[in-house]
Length: 131
Image 1 (spheres, rainbow, N blue to C red):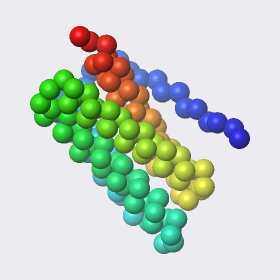
Image 2 (cartoon, helix red, strand yellow; image 1 turned 30 degrees about the vertical axis):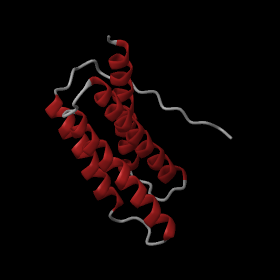
Image 3 (cartoon, rainbow, N blue to C red; image 1 turned 45 degrees about the horizontal axis):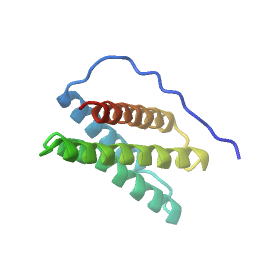
């Protein structure tokens, strides 16, 4: 079984909280639009449902972490955002690998999910290292 690994090259430009909220919301709306013409079968419905839920959770939980009550609460919510962005990445790879949908949007969304996952992983690592 071969493993495909995508390398993310991130520009070191700090995003504001508002810009990240907008970016995660756009990711969710792009995923919803992407799933609108999925195959009308059990696999299509299930994969679309899982992807829409995880992509929506990225934005919703990012907004929630901005209202964290404490540092441990922030870390916990950030870990959830990381998990959901990684899950979105997983479902998008399943879509690509099964050829459920083969469009440029598939690769664009995979790249975006990968970048979001890398950003949130870096944020979590940095936050945990700070005292």
